[in-house]
Length: 428
Image (cartoon, rainbow, N blue to C red; front, side, top):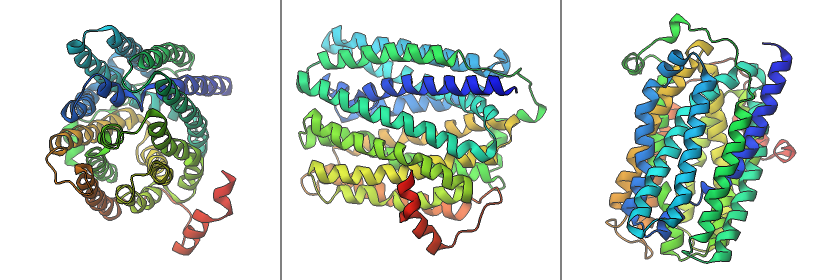
C-alpha cells in the first residue's frame, strides 16, 4: 500500500475518532440514566444492556461472510455507522413520545446502536491492521485512544453539566445530548468514507466455520483467549450496568457527582492506554492482560468501602488504569495471534463469544439485583462481592490457559514493578 494512502487513512481515522468521541461522551454514560428518567426498573436496565450484545453475538457469526459477499470491509463499516446514526435519531425522538412508548423505543434504539457498532468493529480493526506494522500498533492505538479518551471524558463532563442544569429526570437535557450525538456521528461517517481500502482479496485459509473455531479450543491459543475473555465479560457485566442504578437511585447522586465518578475511570483509562500499548509491544499482549487480571478484581471490593463520591472517583481512576492494561494487551494479542487473512473472521468470532457473555451477565444481574441480601443497606453490595469472585476465577483461567505468541523481552517481576510505578509511567 502506498505511503500517501496510509497517511491519509490514518488522518481520517483520527478525524473519525475525534467525532466519535464527542458522540460517545454525550451518550455512552447516559443511556441508563435516560432509561431511568423514562421510569425504567432494574429488569428493564438489564434488558437494555443484554439484548444488544446477544443479538450482536449472533450477527458476528456472519459478519465475515457479509464482507466476502460485498468484497469490502469499508462498505460494511459504512453501513454499520449509518445504522448507528438512525438509532441515535430514534433515541432523540424518545423525548417526544408518550411515556408508555418512549422506554421500549429507547431500548430498541439502544439495541440498534450497540449491534451496529459491534458489527462494524471487526472489519474496521482488520482495515486498520493494513495500515500499521506490528511494531507500531500498540504505540499508535495507545496514542489515538488517549486523544479519543480525553475528548470522551471532556464531553462526558459537559453532558453531566447539561443534565445537572436541567435537573434530575428532565428530558430536555437528553434531547440535547442525543441530538448532538446524532450530528457528530454523521461527521464521523464522513471521515470513515475517506479511508483507503486496498483491493479485496479473498484468501482460502480465511474460510473456517464457527464450529471449527470452537473445536480448536483445546489446541488454539486464540480460542482459549476468546473463551477466557467471554467469561470475563460475563463476570464484569453481571454488575456493570447497575452502577448507574446504584448511584442515581440507591445513593441519590445528582448528575454532577454521577459525572465525576463515571468519567474519571474513562479519562485515566484513555490517558494510560499509550503507556500500556508501548508495554504490550515490548513484553507481549498476553502478559499485559494477565497483569490486568490481577488488578481488576480489586475494583468492586473497593466500591464496598465507602459511598462518598470523592472516594469512588479515586476508585474509578484506579479502575481506568487497570482496564487500560486489559484492553491494550488484548488488542495487541489479537493482532499478534491471528494472521491478516483470518483476522476479520477471527475477530468476529471473538466478538460473538464475548458478546454472549456480555448479554447473559446483565440478564442474571437484573434478575438478582432486587433479590440479593442487602449489605450495608444495598443489595448492590452483594452483587459486587459476587462479581469480584468471578473476576478472580476468570483471571486464573487467563494465567493458566493463554500463552504469549511472539518473542518478547524478558521482564523479571522486580523490573515489572519498577517499570509500573517508576519514571516511565510519568512520561505518558
